[in-house]
Amino acid sequence: MIYADLANELRRRAETDERARNRCIQTGEPGDLSQVDADNTAWIKTVIAEHGWPGITLVGSQGADDAWLLVQHADRDCEFQRQALELLKSAVEAGDAPARHLAYLTDRVLVSVGKPQLYGTQYTDEGGSLQPQPVHDPEGLDERRAAMGLDTAAAYDRRMRKRYTS
Image (cartoon, rainbow, N blue to C red; front, side, top):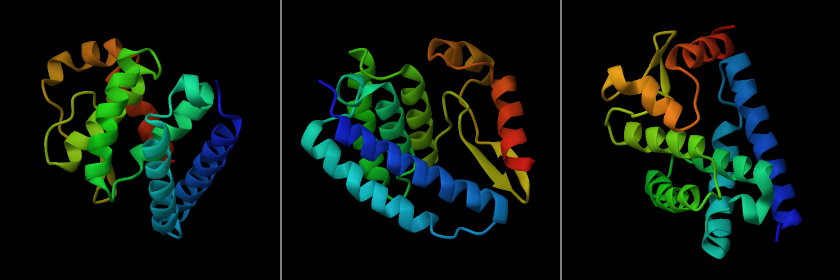
């Protein structure tokens, strides 16, 4: 059973997140991004405590995308991201969440603890230059990405540079 109200609130919050991030990219100023992230993190924590991982069966495909986005951007609460990663792993194994979500959140958690990422999804701005965070076993990167439903690292790199440097 899909919870439409929950899915709608996830959509609203994800759209607010995207607007705040786009403003930050365009202006170079954080604006209200920290507050948006804090509000969304507190809210998604309560959702997960009540319902478990908000997967496709609970909130539909768009809702699952939106829930993942809120957790992905909960960087100020790395412990919560690590806990959510375990729930997401189970959801992916059960077919209730896309593997690509697991790839992105895995990389986010690894980078947050200073380890090399596995899927090459995380970038950083180094002196005005967008650079991928270090990757474990770069030779096997595209194979790992393909297994998670991601395109090649080169194609992703082009998209990232276009979005964040245009």
